[in-house]
Length: 319
Image (cartoon, rainbow, N blue to C red):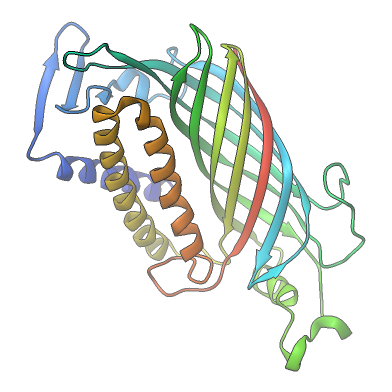
């Protein structure tokens, strides 16, 4: 996984550089000791003490608690509702993004980002949010992984804001699912029940997964925020590094194009900028998730994936 993440970061850097060749101007700011990379994007700066250190003192400790109802789907078969709980602890950062305009007042937007360790569960037995179904075709799983969020938004006051977010992450989990062969395992015309195929394909081995969540974060005060989101998880039946890396590179390139375009929109129409970032980035994530339902390493031909959709409500604490 370390190699994959390193490759994605390298490709992302190449993508940004490629689209900025005609207007790139590298300047060293002696007073702030930062390097401005894009002439037309004053908000993008490299600060090695802050951007590349997980435990940076410039970030606030943060805890997220989310809960919701999820719908697993495999080969077009809906497995019913299960409870979804997500716990993230890590660090966050909020800063003002000042957009200067000629002959007009400056516009101040808010930028937010966080990262942290992820603990997540899908459980059909808890009977807290979804209706309990005594059915062996239901399943549960517990995930451990890593999460990252980024968002842009609007100031509502000195310490209050509304942010349009995208959260991404990855993890490992084992399905607690034991649906075996029985009289009801054959469907119409003798087709094998997809719920039986899931057991045969995934079994009890540890599997890799990735996810994204599109959401809104409302911070009435600096210490607390309310989160609403729609999340999609993709659980790989097998993880083949080179296939997954190639698929990830294609997605990173698409994201680079989308972000560059959104930056242009934000510079010319600042108040539309956060909406453009939210729509374009989440549209890319959603499109790739849909394409990977049938080919989990799209555009490389591969097996179907287990997809889990969920609607979540949560609260974050910033210390």
